[in-house]
View 1: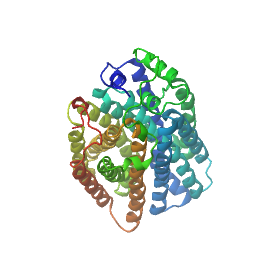
View 2: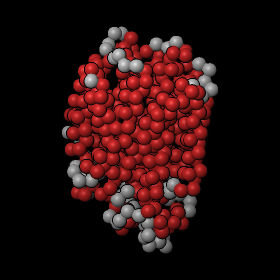
View 3: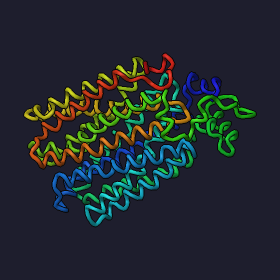
Length: 442
């Protein structure tokens, strides 16, 4: 993109058109959070119905994450070739169908397969919605925009917990999946009618009718229209270059550190968010108290990503994210020992939700601003995919460790170590593109 056109978004005031695009991305992440983490709140009921052990439940909790890894890795490079918007539509159709069919699953094996299918669609949606939110936000507000998208994910997870508490007893766990599937499919017309394609994508890849589409977007941004597209810029050839572009000599150090960070943070995040309701029951609370604790943790996450975005608009994102990682590790270490004072423990759980969700939102912001336009969706998708490997391995391992005699407190301490290691890796991180001082990425 030419310097003048980049300034239309980077340096100009935020327009209603941009906020609408970001709001739709937030809505998409609400659905993603619901679809992915609904298993955490229905898992104990499902396990009781089918007589599943801890390791088997761990596999079910991880199945959606396997699909997310595959979807992120497979669909994100496609988005850099055909556009972010078509991939979001494909992802919504796949995820919504997977949720609807999950409500009819006759066995744990069938449910696990459908969770993989659901996760595949979610992986594509998540990578592309994060990318669009990043690309339509002004430079100063970019971390906040990604933080708002993260709020959607935590909000969807919270909604899943609230629905599970109220619906499982009255209608059974299948009703929760049915509700999620219908809501996900209902988002398809919203995207068709209101979500714009990425301006950067249109200028970089230049699909048929690109000039008319760019001018419609510029009108929404209250910017002058063009008589012809500007000349391609350096780096445009890398668009659609796939994963090889992420490992080019000038980009490789950034990519490898991002992959390590995503692996560590996602491993810890999904053990905490997927297992907390069950672990609280294992630690001596009632089932309703366990669901309440898990819901409060996700409720805290709504504020965590918003707070991180506001802080990153003022201070360096890397500094803010490092503080979040260290705070997460410390709070996880004291969470279960505080259960003797339930109000205190639940309060700590809310704060854990604030910082642990902020860690994930911060990673999305860091990744989406670390790559050039032509490989941004691929870079975000690859990082999400690598992160989901950790997210798959860790919850499954947690179930096996519980069966082997580990205590819930020992599992939380292990997660604390993962976040501390993430902070150490982050201290060595530098983006592959040089950010402007106002971007908050120094």
